[in-house]
Image 1 (spheres, rainbow, N blue to C red):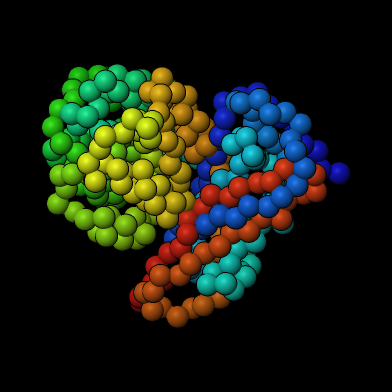
Image 2: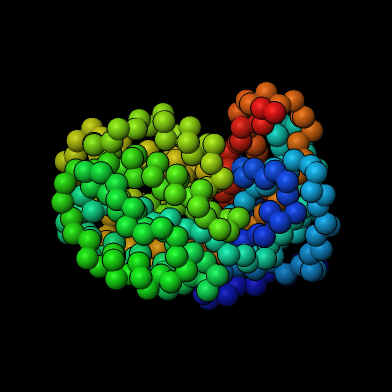
Length: 338
């Protein structure tokens, strides 16, 4: 009988997966759906929900096949991360055709994270708490993780390439000052480009910004396509004034929607924050979430190499007695062309 337990640890965690050693070609993808059940036994914030199931055994993968790999986060109605689900609890659809899951993992693995940090003029009274959030994210990392730092205002600046010594990034981040306009799209593009030098198989961008773009060369269309083509999850922390007191430009008003769309298509998440004092806790939640993911792998039944965008849908069949659960995963991938 499946048991449900609650741990009082920081909200939202994700595990990682070191599957790529088995792959000749790996693509990251996915999407989300919600299922229903009964209320959880504990609704306190900061809880971690674990479904206890037998140990998971992953069959070895052949190295001469294409494998689509999907990172999946599962949360309960109180936004607590749910762990302990089994492979049998998931279904994956590729262009509405159910696929056979041939690989499943929940183990923690090293991750490469690029921090995209907004230091434009509008961040003036929020930049100190934003720095604290970044530092909290670093502190909850694993020793094998590596980090890259990009700051941006009028233009993006690669402050540091990947390093495992986050203390070096802390020192550089503390000297960043606010001023200038917001080249958010250019900064994300630089971050995606920098990810090509990552040494781990799991990759994410953490964007900390207070709104939309008003000074980039790249367009929204450019960036959306780049995100779809990458194997990088995007987590965005949007620092927005309360709706009743916002007096923003058209670009800034569109900031929440832009960040949310980029996060969704990549399988990440966007967190809206109106009180900058909440930033460190949000950053810690994201850090934990990145270490408590499910990773599903399947070989597409459609073997046509047409380079087209293929939509993915991940569905959940949870054990009986669980509350409504939400899935976050990538929404699709581009098929190979050769």
